[in-house]
Length: 144
Image 1 (cartoon, rainbow, N blue to C red):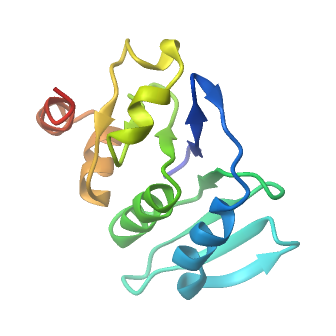
Image 2: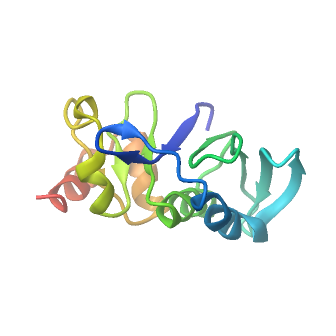
């Protein structure tokens, strides 16, 4: 895919940097890392042949991912975000949470237009990215 996704933690409507989450995310990514630079850039490869570039800036919580493929790579993105309780954000996409807890901490501007979704898999993330109304609707209903 040719755009960037961002995963960010929030607390009380503000970006929340929780350094303790970084080692948890790296534990999820580490089995798939094929190249690392400076502790901030991690290139991954997945058994299905896909991969992604993860950027974990400094010691803070969150990441940016680009040059990602579909399939198992999207599952890895979801697992990494979920491990740290992060919301997945992308241009024109509804904010995607993987647990209900982060929903109450999202900034007000992320709560509508488009409304958030609760995703459980990379397949659902793919549907959200593709704008699949049935998947977005199902994921949104989970939050009601």
